[in-house]
Image 1 (tube, helix red, strand yellow):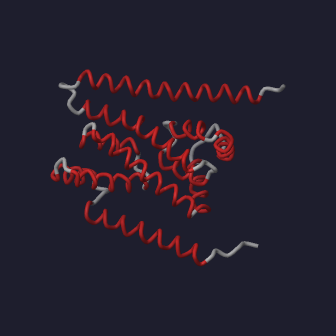
Image 2 (tube, helix red, strand yellow):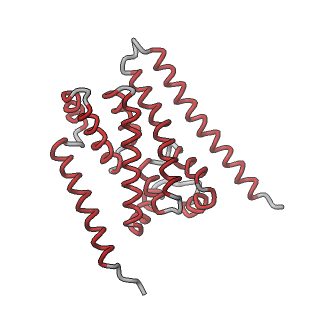
Image 3 (cartoon, rainbow, N blue to C red):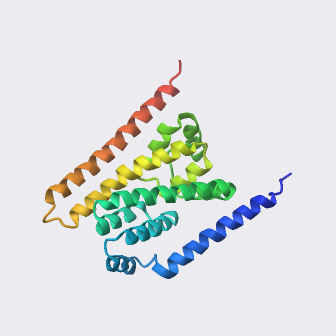
Length: 235
């Protein structure tokens, strides 16, 4: 028999939803967050101040929750704030990841269905249940591997980890590492390329860093595959 949800649980879910949508409506009304060109213009007009950076972090956090690609937000941070954008995208990425993780825990059954639907849109080499099992068995190392995969959308990863057995500490550290390094390189590359004539060496260095980052991910993937093959060999 299906257990009825406790009144406290229903109240918490309602409070979370109301708070979230009030914040979203405020940002939509005051900053028109889905009008990218208008938003960039508004932020440019505000200038390079502490307030505009706080606005960017708030808007970027909401956009990252609502499935806007993290690389797009990182590129915008690079254009607007140059190297300061590395810190801003790190904060935004971490905040959005924590919010998504909390929402996945609170609305676990709904989040589980969302993850299944989003993950199974494409044919995957690793079934979802096997992915959960590997995260459970290997913890931090496999969570870092999944987090770094370029074809795993940031938001899907947030929800996936939220309904998996990964610890909050492992979730925070893997998110911090991959956003700071992976998207930090994107910010650096865009900030250099935006003034290419004056920053040719910096742009080339950024491309080199990006290439090394993906080579590192590929190495981890191959190493992980070999380890799995050894585990499957009969004794």
